Every structure is written in structure tokens, then in C-alpha cells.
Length: 126
Image 1 (cartoon, helix red, strand yellow):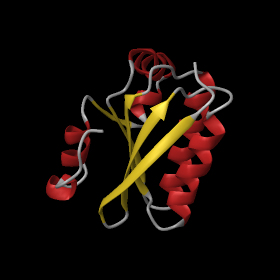
Image 2 (cartoon, rainbow, N blue to C red):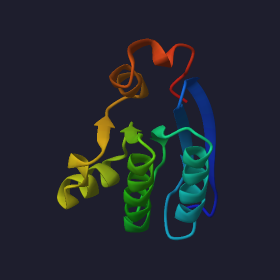
Image 3 (cartoon, helix red, strand yellow):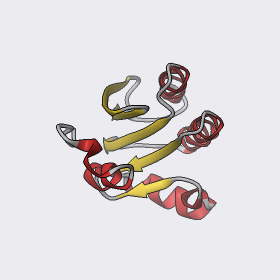
Image 4 (cartoon, rainbow, N blue to C red):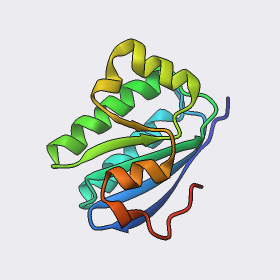
């Protein structure tokens, strides 16, 4: 586990942000994820895609943060979509039923296609 978490954000379409998450999401770093995501929503980007391909560890604190971000996005008329979900998080989503709330895709490309066809033009997988 690391003590750092980085988000690289791209805006492929109106109201849509793709946040590439790099690092581990745990008790120490989850607040960074929450703060950055809520800031995006408050700035008028309520549709979020988290590209998790570069995340090795995701604990229950991170899962709780995802639920909070999903609620905030919903209240703003948006959504939270996950792409390239690591195995541990995928199991947690399934076991807790949270996978019924969040859109989950195998790749970033699939997530972008689900949210608007060509919205992903020019956005790489990480």
C-alpha cells in the first residue's frame, strides 16, 4: 500500500469527467478521492468515470467513499461509472450489492461508449 493517490482528469464531453486513479485507495488516501470527486461535481461535472486500471489495492473505506460520491453525483443529476475495476473491489461490489448501483465496465472504452458513443474520442486508457 502507498500513502499517495493521484487523479488525472480529462473532460471528453460536457458534464463528463474521466478520472484516472493511480495508487492505493485505503483509509489514508480515500479522503483525497472523495474531495477531488466532490470538487468535480460541484464544478458542474456530475457524470464521472473512474478508470481504476492503475489501482492495486482498494479497501472498504474506499468502497464507502464510492457510495458517497455516487450519492453526490445522483443529487447533481449525474452518475458514477467504474472502469477496469481491480479484483478485490469487484468482489466487494458484488458481495455488498453495490454493483447494482454503480455502472461497472471492463474497460474505459466500454464505459465511455455506455455514456455517449463518441464522448471518448481522444481519451486514452491511462
